[in-house]
Image 1: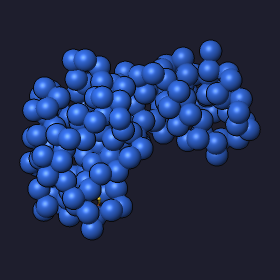
Image 2: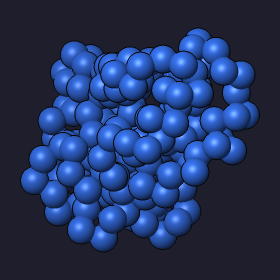
Image 3: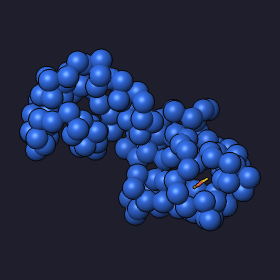
Length: 153
Ligand code: FES
């Protein structure tokens, strides 16, 4: 089922992370299924437990279905000091979700937290899919969410 994606890479254990990224990116719900993890393990000739060890170690991987768009809010100290809590509160309000890790009822957004995104000078920061947004205010977050909802991101 995932053969086409997996076989784009050489069967070397060092390619595990790249393969997992590709699998997750290709899934409409941005996660790695049990079938995919098993197929990767067989292809690389490593135990399935090793594949799961990697999946669960890195927060960017998920074993649960997620929304069409993934929002990652940086919660490292510089962003925290610049008000990431307010941004988090606003995001929850806009997406009508109670806690991080949840997906909005329309299936459009999953809200997650993460460590430093490497642009601390622009704190507070979020990343929506592959795009980083900095110097955030609650108003700016509202505009970003509307833009993504309208398919303009
Ligand atoms: S602390 Fe948030 S981007 Fe570095």
